[in-house]
Length: 126
Image (cartoon, rainbow, N blue to C red; front, side, top):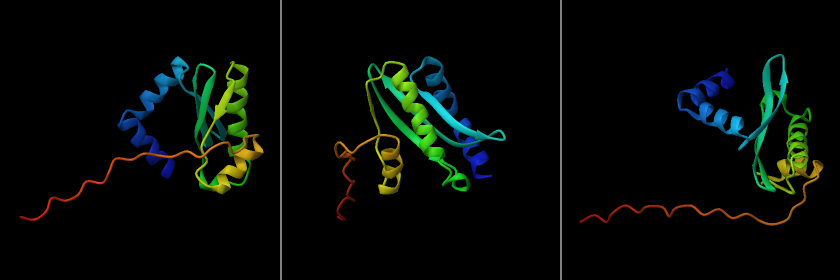
């Protein structure tokens, strides 16, 4: 039910159409693990010349601990390498995810920092 709800939201806000265009032009490459017509795990890589980022690898909670995230990540890396990509990078949300990526051959290289807009302060009462 959650998957269907999320798919409907992505269709309604135009995200699904935008991603479909990116896939059609090769700007985004998608890999998925599918069982009985249901996507259990999916991810993407976004090549720019000889560099790509693996992003958005996610597994349905009911399908976790089956190696699907590792398999999808490995498929994305294999596709990237087969198409001339020399540098493949990604970011892990936490140590559990990093452990999966290390099993796919990734190693920690650097720390990513994120800049966010400064919080807006309420105007002082007059």
